[in-house]
Length: 343
Image 1 (tube, rainbow, N blue to C red):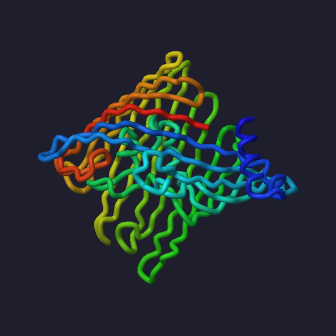
Image 2: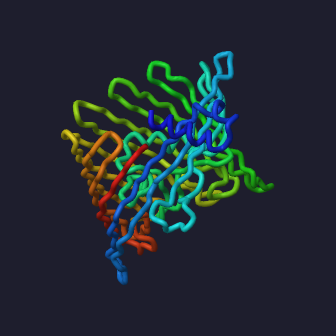
Image 3: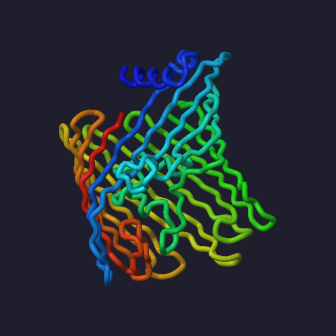
């Protein structure tokens, strides 16, 4: 009710005629700030304290019945600079934003959106995708530095999502290369199939990325994700294989995996995640990360949490999701306190 009242006030502020047309607007968002302490064991590294805004966001969304069983749907979402570090109120700019049509066939949208491959993992992520504690520091990443990432949101995309049929949904996203040249055409095709019903979640994701690392060669990624809820607890897992074409004649396949679980005890919850990334075509280029989370929910919309994570690189790896400029073989750690409020 409060959301609807606020939405009406916003619409009225723009113009009286627009008041009736925009009465179906929903305003939503999340304030997600953490106090982090990070360090690395590499020579010369300095421990740091910081306030992070993470994936704090603000959005508007809604729909309009346009007849014949169709609805026009829209969403505009931006990442907010909750700690003031950006200086302009915005974090990394546009988040999931699109306009489209929905009906019995499902929905089709145009805009800027998380790829289906990325979304398959959301169900087992403990921290959202942008904190120093997130499993996506490693899962979805390839190369000795983690510089090849499938944890992406695609601009200039068209996406189709099927209706749920017995708990099964299909999603397909295509993003053309607007900077296509005679030598490269970096389009993206991302697909997923998910089942979500009766406490069971299972997903398959696939991405195809031509010319990503080498012109004329196509990189790809495949993953399986699962989660099982029972009582006040759940367990989950992910396994993926990412093929990287390091040259026209040489390629390698990197295998990554994750195990995760959580237990809820009244207002409290305890969760643990373990991620291991495999090596590239070079020895000792893998990494592993352990994250621990304790949360306390004051209400359905407000939660405080404490977290700890440790990311350990193999001797030739330099994943630096926690401490930038990580040296080969370094171990990075972070401890933090966070507060999340959704509206």
